Image (tube, rainbow, N blue to C red; front, side):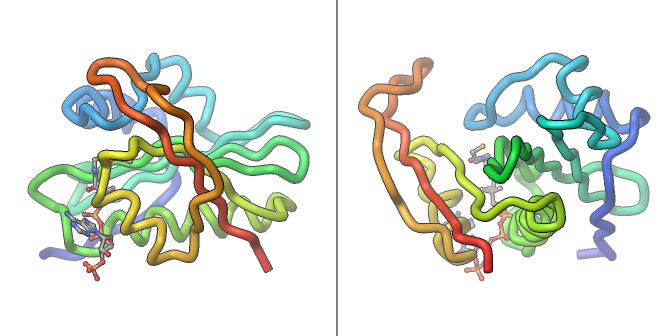
Length: 153
Ligand SMILES: CC(C)(COP(=O)(O)OP(=O)(O)OC[C@H]1O[C@@H](n2cnc3c(N)ncnc32)[C@H](O)[C@@H]1OP(=O)(O)O)[C@@H](O)C(=O)NCCC(=O)NCCS
């Protein structure tokens, strides 16, 4: 694969982020305004970050994180189908985790569809452990959620 650049998301990325999100059934679906609010990471108590992966200006992935007080969440991640298994998902998670750490979080949590085997393997590889399960938490299609947690050193 050509050189992948992992960087903070900008307003000019919003249309591509939305297009990728809409094409990714497993990802939570947000409005453009919600992604826009994640840019810049402002806010006193609750702050969000948006990181993107691009190859020569073409967006191939994004991830969103949130910190509120000392708790943090990896809220969403998606990598373009054609670019998967190239380490982009791991790299995006890494920058979100670092951002949470710098923002003072003691741990990062997330919630994922129980059927999303690729995502669960990705998270386990980064040290996340399952800490709970919510039956039938998701609709369209119905699925359990798995709660996972990574303690930050
Ligand atoms: C989950 C997702 C982000 C992974 O992105 P990716 O760029 O393909 O992941 P990486 O190449 O960095 O893979 C890292 C590790 O994750 C695991 N993994 C990723 N895809 C996998 C798959 N299809 N099957 C098994 N393990 C997989 C592997 O352990 C992999 O390490 P390895 O390649 O050294 O074996 C991507 O599959 C995706 O966008 N899925 C749809 C959206 C989604 O499920 N998001 C999570 C809920 S918000």
